[in-house]
Amino acid sequence: MPGKTGHHPVEVVAQVQSMELNLDYSGTYKLLLEDGSTIHADFTPTQWDHLQSMHNRGRYPIKFVGAGDYTDDRLKHITSIDLPNTERVLPPREPDQRPFWEYWVAASKRIPKKERDQVPPDFIKNLDHYLYGAPKRDQE
Image (cartoon, rainbow, N blue to C red; front, side, top):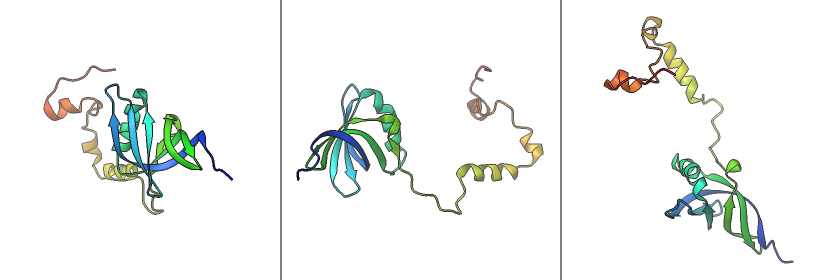
């Protein structure tokens, strides 16, 4: 009995190995699949920024969702990526590991209230001003 052949939906987890980028920011990723094989996935210029930030933020695999070409049940090429459903696959967090923001809150509580009260309310917005003397940004 012949396997799936032709154009079908795709959902695979892979790591970006390399890419070819065209002048218009369209291109092709070379993806390393979990089974050790490689395939190519095409992306459009409008997808470039999002995909680049996704694969540049670490060595985590990405779950690619889209459509691709199959021959005898084997995926040969991802021809389009469904960006809203494509996401990085983060490793599971240890049960006793706290999220980063909880460390931030705990550390900020160790700063005496008298010191915290001296921080200007626009400190984050005008960080460059307070650290380096840059002009202040307008209040919004």
